[in-house]
Length: 337
Image (tube, rainbow, N blue to C red; front, side, top):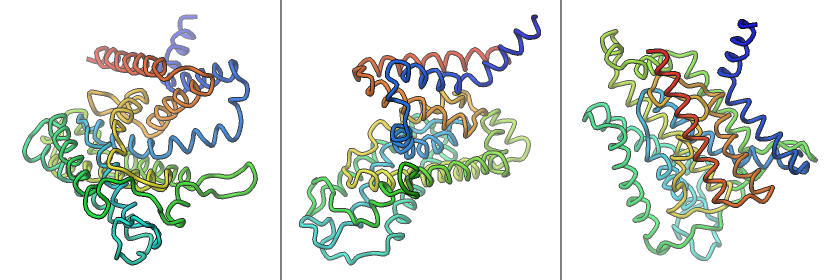
């Protein structure tokens, strides 16, 4: 009997995140059966797509034992950059009136590279200047918002929301593959592809192995011959590139951009990672867990709205889940010491 109880406890402990997600879906569906449907499922996946990419970028850094408060502002900056270069020619308030119609790939690549550069700056500040990640990314968060606001306020735009985006660009965020009810949005396919690539990096590469080693014990990693400085710069750069891609997709999904895009996204991403099993002390985290964490918060936002629960109650529920997840994580960490 005791053996069976231990097996059940072990199963629940290992799969708690998926059990919580299933209970949420079942509970909402019991309250309102209309919640179960292909369109609802598709909407949840679309809303989760950019959040998953941001959360995966944050997961890279959390696993090393750091944190990143600049993720949301990088999303906002790269959304504005990509949108500003991909407006239709006859739009009355073009950001760049004389800019020719660029090949779609170039503005997307420019935005991703901008994210990568700011991620690299974060990595250099943390690894070379030895500034704690919380302070380093808090500083770059403020600076990036300032840079974005200056860019957004240039003539002739003067802080007006950027609209009139090209159809070939917005189709990335709103188009889908398939027909009838069985359509898979392009943005979901992109998020799945990114998740697979990140899973490979986490589990099948030296980068992933060293990332977990740094998060488990940075000093031991240095002693074992790992170039911690180099790998931290690479990891922060990859995270920045992921934020850049998420910014591009967010602009394509919404059909526009402002300098306030991405505000507080980093907190949602950190919360999703923590709920998804990424340890706040570093060294632990999985891609499926992060994806499940994002889905939980999307189901909370979408599902509770669906059944008429007010936004303030949603925040209370989200906050309780975050605190419970961190408390559970710290108890597991303490039991291992």
